[in-house]
Length: 443
Image (cartoon, rainbow, N blue to C red; front, side):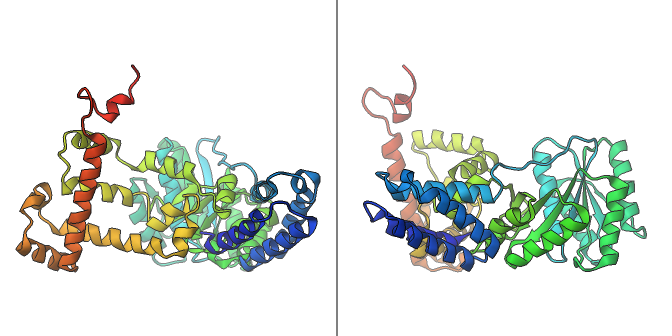
């Protein structure tokens, strides 16, 4: 996400940091490069023009030019303006009604059906009782897909074969009210914004259900075209917000920077992966930090708290203290890390990670993790609990079973022993029979 834009902006600010003092010409030269970087990232040219002018108005002044750290002051201004361009504050859903109706609309192929299920999963975790509505009767597999996703997240799906979408939506709202479900998510058929008949069908659904939210599901990979789509849908339906999908696959990020400024409608959620938990609230300031290479540690911590098994972490600490770490523990910790997503997504949220990505370390680490998991899973439980029994013949069998070589198996075993020694040094008892963990406790 934003890889290309982040790399270019980082280069600009690195050069500016090398100057002890900035002149007005230095700032103007930097702004020209920022403008070019934004245009190459497929940001709408009107948005770029307005953004750069706002930055210039703040940057070409005494506060920056006379500052002891002018480059840092300029970065601060750019960060604030990027945040403002994307909406300033996080925009939340308005779900005060019971049941609240959320209508998801968009072009065919933008990811509405998957986004509907992801949003249902997210709302369920927040304590809501959502229900999904299969109102896409055009795409042959849409209903089956939604049924499968609903079963996966344990959310009911309302389908009424033979009925028109406006009637399906209306009956689903009545069903939700009678069965005490507080959010109705309506998955509609994809349509072209120039298809007047199908747009009219959406207007009928709006008239019949009175939705609290009308969310456009837009594909970030379409760049500036996503802005045009949003503007047309907004004109007909008065959108309340946008879900930007496939943002994890867009290294440029132009749609994310353009769509809020161009339409006035906030991005409420962004898609960050194909899995059912690959949807997260849009935080403009955090997104601006990521664009500038500052990472997003807060979101990473929130995801770790939500997805990682705390009891496993506590059990691991106990095993470390007793020097009883096994390859089974090693496997479980790698599997826990996978819950946070691909290594590229994790590094995307860590400040300065673009240097690792530029050097290719991200891909190497991702490959190494997959290889290690395959090797560990190829072992028997007895071998994982008793690593000392793994001799030459067992290594050959493990290598064959995992599609790797014996040297790869040796590397995993070596890394395990290194980790075990390091943890033993940290967790081992020292001085008066106390551990470093004990020393952290209040006296």
